[in-house]
Image (cartoon, rainbow, N blue to C red; front, side, top):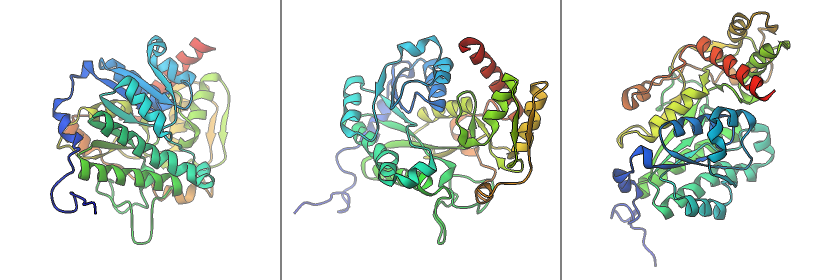
Length: 356
């Protein structure tokens, strides 16, 4: 009969990759594996990591989107790229065997809540099983640290604000507010804590909020259409959503926070919110800023919320970034939404000029 040494009170099993973190290579000698590195946030991550002197390897199910390639710049062609799914354990092990990363940034996931609700096995295999595949590969190859992307979608409803990492994510009468997406993120977070407690895995989790910037997708409201249509001289009119508040966060700030989390001291918190930490901004305010920054912009939005937005707004609240400030020495570069949108406008103009 086998015995579980951990349950028998004999401490952690012999595998303790956390102990190896004390001997981590200097930053300039590290190879960082970035899953989901070919997408919107991924492109900003790759650029920020390269700027620190790291070597970066990207694992994704698709090639770089044009905006990510533009963000990374000419060096994008030199970034080793593995076309693979984190849901495929054998491929993940192959990638680790070939590239021998020193740390991992896990931003690969399926984001679409509607898709996840109708493809539930895939939801588990990728958003939960993918994390397990990465962590098991880290154990096999002695990789000491991972930064895991989660989401504010883990929150069930606002219990207090500003919301910090101690805010409940499971209540007696409510779970994650974004159904299968938020639930898979909660499951992944819980499993990382299990690996930490049992095997010493050194992880940090980031919960980003309303990330915007060049290459963003449609899940953060109409800000993408407002900015990009305005730059192209096209109208952007929306019937609903003006009153919808969000804690907008520029993608460059998310990338900077991830770099800080990779270099976090061993006693730092495990969970950080990716936000600016200030008051929320409504979509009406975003529209006004775009009109001011892009003269002649034809941007309009109605104040009323759509039926789909009404339950989501109940999940919105100011987020605390005090632990990132105190423990990581991190400050958002674009604490002002106006500054962030101005940067987005500038980046999109440059992208259009460069790519047509």
